[in-house]
Image (cartoon, rainbow, N blue to C red; front, side, top):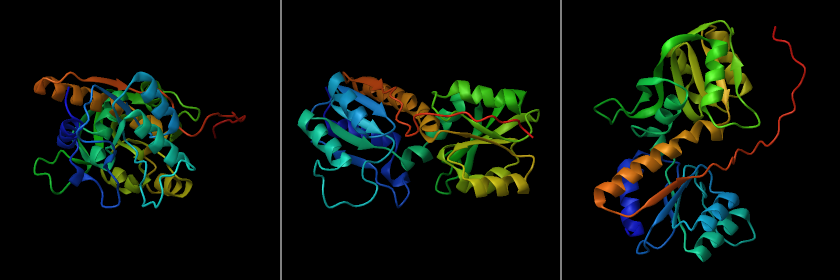
Length: 280
């Protein structure tokens, strides 16, 4: 079995920490680099339910997309939910590692996995990383459908390709509009609405679209459809990609390593109350 330090090195080769945004907090949160690792659990959120799943499965390492501590802290006391997570992990001898915006910017990364999940073939990044001479890394992705679809059918395909959540998928645009080229961004993506418009795509799939940016985008570019899914759901497909690529690294190194993807729905919204509505 490999040491934790060796597994972290393999993860850092896939998602180099230097690709993370300056405000981000990626890397090893807790764990002894000399400990051995046999089982790795992948999850989006480092919440207590995920940690308890890791304990029950006998994981030695949890890899999450979202950081536990994005900002500085002065305490890991178990009086807070984040402190309880740390205490539970340490008591069980489980390490925690985070790959966040470095995984967003990777090739392949979070948006590649999202594009694949909803049936797109990626052609390049939405916002290219200027430090990548190949022009493959960056924020978001642009992709194409094998065959054009009406917006209503495409939105249904997005909903079917992502794990189910209480909020489902929201859509803005003419339901009969033809969709061919699509921009995607896993996680919160309304900061890239201008780039999506400039890319000349037919639709933009992301999460956490706020009212004013979405309204302004619809007014500025009525030919751009918006498909808004749950934040957790748009990032969850990356877990399978990361588990697969770490497994391939383990095979190359001759490690005995077992990976597992958590299917716990950790989206914070837990219910949806439908309202009578007729589209105008």
